[in-house]
Image 1: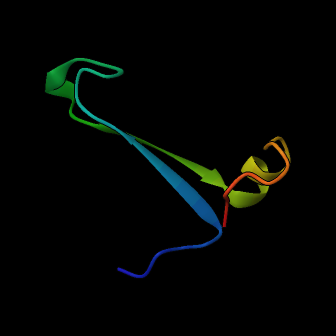
Image 2: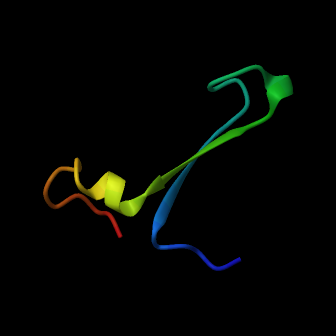
Length: 45
């Protein structure tokens, strides 16, 4: 699978944000949406 530079994926283990039976969770953020509020010089693609 080729990585997408237009998005950042954050993955959470089971129990981190829900019940173990629900499995893991993932959140997707566009790089534009993350870069705008990021601190200057933050190591982002």
